[in-house]
Image (cartoon, rainbow, N blue to C red; front, side, top):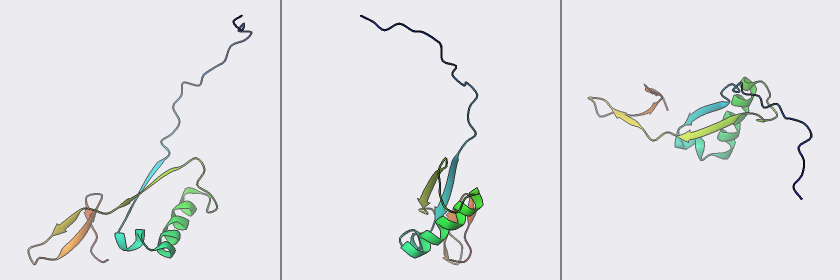
Length: 86
């Protein structure tokens, strides 16, 4: 026998704020555990809780974009800008 609906459920239709955070890392940092943990702690501190990342969608991307100037200097590109040192 099918169950009977006794009440109703209110579904919140107000969207939650975007909780995605994008962090671009050079490979040298991404593949060094201590350096990565230092970056992670810094990001978490800026998000308001250095002890956890609950409620945040943190997306760590390894830089795979590069720019070369007229002197053939190779630089990593992050978010449309160029990293000068590193």
